[in-house]
Length: 209
Image 1 (cartoon, rainbow, N blue to C red):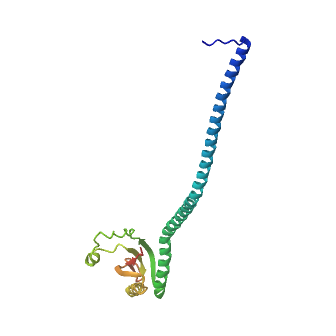
Image 2 (cartoon, rainbow, N blue to C red):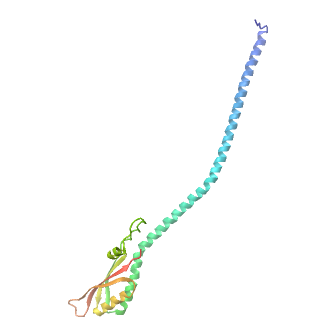
Image 3 (cartoon, rainbow, N blue to C red):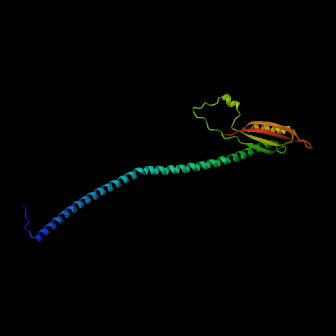
């Protein structure tokens, strides 16, 4: 049997010191645990920053490629806009060229033949070429069907006689601009004191795709 003979005051001090030591051990353990946790967090943060820097360096070429792709897209859009504008101006250019051709063809019969009216019918857009696996039409089929790349120019006017009309038709054929030149009609003007005739000429122009 153990009998504590120490005074109560001393026994209280001993118990208090034991409690303080226990709490100190607990706080030392908690502090050590917190230090280890913070150290692991710092190491993980540094690793994350290094990984982020590596990924940023790896993504720089991708970002540069994206910027270049955007620039190429803007260039393509600008080129498409220019092509559209040129396509819109193309008929006007054809009319200017045709006016020059007609002016040169009329010159031999100047004063004896006049072009009073002309109209230009443009062909439809050429469809895209067929895929390699699709059978293309034969030459006979192409010759049998009318050409889709021919524009039609209709001329109407007056001339002093048939010889001037024939001279005008011959001049048109020798311009090397028209695929076909046909005199559709040549009619004597009724009720006119002067010998004059009206004519109508149809010309075919090969339109480049």
